Length: 180
Image (cartoon, rainbow, N blue to C red):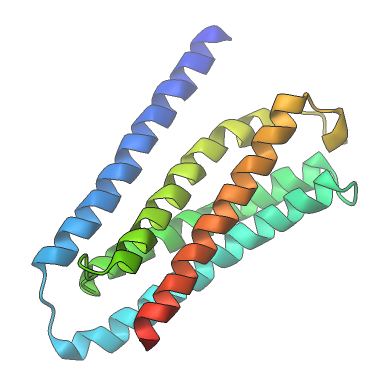
């Protein structure tokens, strides 16, 4: 069992490094690339579509988590939502990274830097959540949220709050940047 935990920890560390490297590459490419103006509208559309896919999937997973925490759902339903929706979450995030570089973020604008930081936080939090989802997968299907150890309950709630704050910070700043 310990070897399995060490392997999961190493994979999670590699995922943290991979996410941070992808984010840094996106930001760096955004400062180097100079795409033609005609590409801006399709890129913005794909960026928004990626946002809808990624954030929409996150909202559904976290909605199921909230239902579980309030006694309206089971651990099994949260696991199913996570298993079903994790691919759209990461596809949406990958789309945001890919299109974000082509949108040439202005790193001279403090709000843009905050937005990019929020995107990094939400991506790293997504990796962190793999620990909690692995724990969730080992729970009985009818496990009650309130019966979990306090540290586990706090971990789930903090991860959900961090996720929502980071996603909505990025969305709000993106909206302000596009209209201002």
